[in-house]
Amino acid sequence: FPPNMIRNFSIIAHVDHGKSTLADRILEFTGAISKDIKNKQVLDKLQVERERGITVKAQTASIIYEHQGQKYLLNLIDTPGHVDFSYEVSRSLSACEGAILLVDANQGIQAQTVANFYLAFTNDLTIIPVLNKIDLKTANPEAVKEQMFTLFEIDPDEVLQVSAKLGKGVTAVLDAVVKNVPSPAVKCNINTPLRILLFDSWFDRYRGVVCLTLVVDGSMKKGDYITSSHSGKTYEVKDLGILTPQETPIPHLYTGQVGYFTANIRDTKDALVGDTFHQRGAQCQPLQGFRQAKPMVFAGVYPMDQREHTALKAAIDRLCLNDGSVTVQTEASSALGQGWRLGFLGLLHIDVFNQRLEQEQGAQVITTTPSVPYKVRIRGARAIRDYRGDEVMVTNPTLWPDTNVIVETSEPFVLGTIIAPDDYLGAIIGLCQERRGVQQEIRNLDASRIIMMYKLPLNEIVIDFFDTLKSMTSGYATFDYEDLGFELSTLEKLDILLNGHPVPELSTIVHSSQARKIGKSMCEKLKDTLPKQMFQIAIQACIGSNILARTNIKAVRKDVLAKCYGGDITRKMKLLKRQAEGKKRMKMYGNIEVPKETFIDILKR
Ligand code: GDP
Ligand code: MG
Image 1 (cartoon, helix red, strand yellow):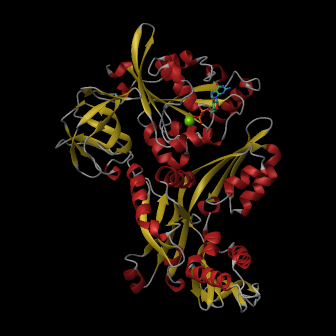
Image 2 (cartoon, helix red, strand yellow; image 1 turned 90 degrees about the vertical axis):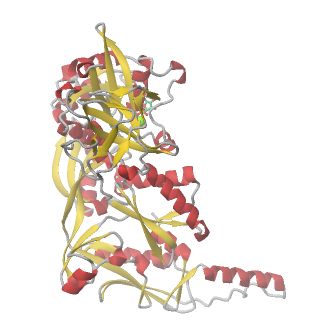
C-alpha cells in the first residue's frame, strides 16, 4: 500500500460513549475478527480495562477496506481513554491524520469529549463527528448536534449517526474516513532515510519490549539497525509486522504504515512514547515534541505485612516494566515500615496501578493519601549545598526544607472542565471556591446544561474532588482536567504533635489559607481513632511553633484483667499475650503508643 492508499485514524470519546463497541464493529465488519466473539471488546486487553470500561494501554489494528472498488489500508489507532495519559493520547494522535469524535446521542457532550476534542484539534487532525447509540429511545441527535455546533463549530449536516451496538451506519463512517481524512503522504517521504515515531510500547517476557510505530520516512525490515534519538542506543530489529489486531509478521513496514517491532529492548524506559528512531549512523532530525511524561501524583505504597516486602517489590518491578511512566523511590516510615514512594501521571493512574497490583500480582498493600510534588526555592550556601541546588522538588513532606531557608514555594495547577445540569451551578461554584478554584469561563452548553472551566490546584482535586462533585450532582456532572504547570503559592508544612512530640508520618504540606481547617480536622480524626491511654494526651496541629488547633484525649485506667474474675489462668494468659502482640504493632511517640491501625486509618486513602 503506497501512502496515498493509507488512512491513519483514531476514535476519541468520553468513557462509555461506545468507543470499544464501535472499534469492535469496525474490525468485525472488515473481517478482521469473527462475528462469533461478539461484544468481546477485543481491543481492551487488560483486566482492569474490561472491568472499568476504560482503555489504559492503547491497542491498534490494521484493516483492509474497499471503497469504490479500491482497497485501502486503514490503521485504527486506539488511544488511552483518559487524560491522565494525555501525553500518550497526544502522541498516539500524532500518528494519525484524523479522528472519529464519538458522542453518545443520549448523554451528549461530556467533559472528556471536550478535553479529547482539543487534543485532536491541537494535533491538526481532521475530525469526523459521529453520534452513537441512536437506537436508544431517549436519543436526542438534534440537540447533541447543536451542542457540537456551540462548542466545536461543527456543521450539523456533517454529523454521522450510528448504532455501534447494532452495527448500523458503520460503513458510512469508514467511507468518511477514506474520503475526508488526509493520507499520511502529506507528512511522509518514501525516498528519505528511515525515521519512525514510537507511540506505544509494552513489555513481553520473551521478546522484550514490543514497540508500536508509525513509519514516517523510508522503510524498515528485519535485521535493520535502528538508533533512538532520545538515548542514542542502537538495536537490531528482530521481528516486525502489523496488528490485525493479532500480531502478523510481514517482511517490510513501508512509509505511512503502522505496525509493531521488537529489537531486544529490555526496559520500557528505553522505549519511550514519542521517541524517534532512525537508521544507525544516519543524521536525523527527531520528530517534534518529544518530552518524557512527568509524574504529578505521588503516594506511598507499603506491604500490609513486612514479610511480604520482597514479593511486593518484585510485583511493583513487574508492573513498572509495562508502564515506564511510573517512578519508584524507596521510602521508610517508622509506622508503616519499608515501602516505596511511587509517582503517577494522575488519579486514575494510581487506581489502575493499585488494582493491577492486587489482581494480577496478588499483593496486599497499604497506599497512603496521594499528594502532589511541590517546588521550593531556597537560599543560603549551606542549604543549597545540602539540597544540591536552589530549587527543591518535594514529594514527601518530611523532606520539606527549613522555613528560614525558603524563598518561595509553588504547586501544580490544572485547568478543569466540568459539564453538569444547570440546577447545580451554585453548588459547583461553591465546591470549586472551597477548593481554591479560580473561574475561567462558564457558559451554556444547551438549554439545561452548563460547561465550566476552573483553574484549580492539583492538590485540591487529588483526593475526593470528583467523588464530591458526582455525589452533589446525583452523578450527572463529568469532569476532566489538563496540566497547567507550577505556579507560586503560599505553602507551609503542618505538623502533628502528641504531647509535644512530632509524628513525622502525619506531616502534610498545606496552603496557608487551609492550614487551620486541615489542622483541626486532623486533630479530630486522631481523637476518634487513637486509643485512650492511662494518661491524658494532648494532640496539636502546628506550623513551626505556631499552634493552630489542639484537642485532648482523657486518661483511662486500662486494666485488661479486670474483666476476668475468678481464676481461669489460661484465659488471663491469652489476654496478656494478645496485649503483648498488640504492643509490637505500636509505635512510641514520647510515651504515647500509636497502633499501626491508627496510621492506616489516617494515612490511607
Ligand atoms: P467506551 O467506554 O467508549 O469504550 O464504551 P463501550 O464501547 O464499552 O460501551 C459502553 C456501553 O454502551 C456498553 O454497555 C455498550 O454495550 C453500550 N453501547 C455501545 N454502543 C451502543 C449503541 O450503539 N447503542 C446502545 N444502546 N448501546 C451501546
Ligand atoms: Mg472502551
